[in-house]
Image 1 (tube, helix red, strand yellow):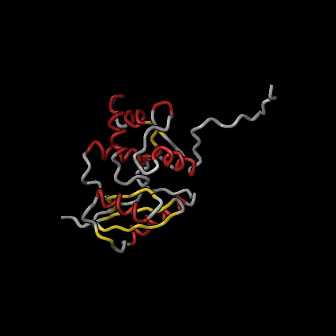
Image 2 (cartoon, one colour):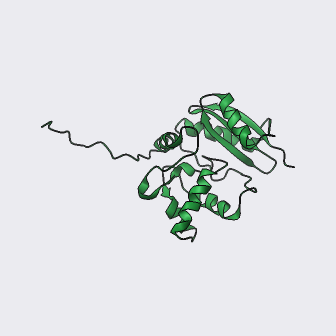
Image 3 (spheres, one colour):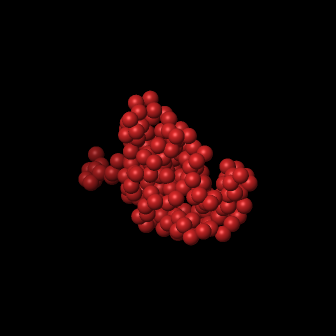
Length: 185
């Protein structure tokens, strides 16, 4: 049986959690307001995980997460993950999502098309994003619903958190303010 260890840490966005095994990072918990609530959410998925001292590669990921929530452009595409528990199609979806760079978005349908699947697979992409075990590292927040609508987000704070993460990256989903002021009549 694989042993999982975890760390709860504070960022400018709140308390995050990260879990790993000897292969790579297995779970990432997006921020909540308290270390206790983050730990509860993380342990709900990995009930046998134990607190541990992260190896160097996990510490690098933790540092990158802190920089991300401080507003710095970060690329998580090289972070070593262990996604062995995921089915093959979800692994393909996650690999495609990891190629979506900072400040860019796509839609569930476009991601399905990129994988050579038909429009009906957009639902599968949505399911994969909802079950993403390492949100942020696999940037599911950059995958939107049809028409560029925010869509769902299963992390704490829901679509508000998704919007804030995109705003950190300079992505505005609302129309810009008009450049011209109204004359008021």
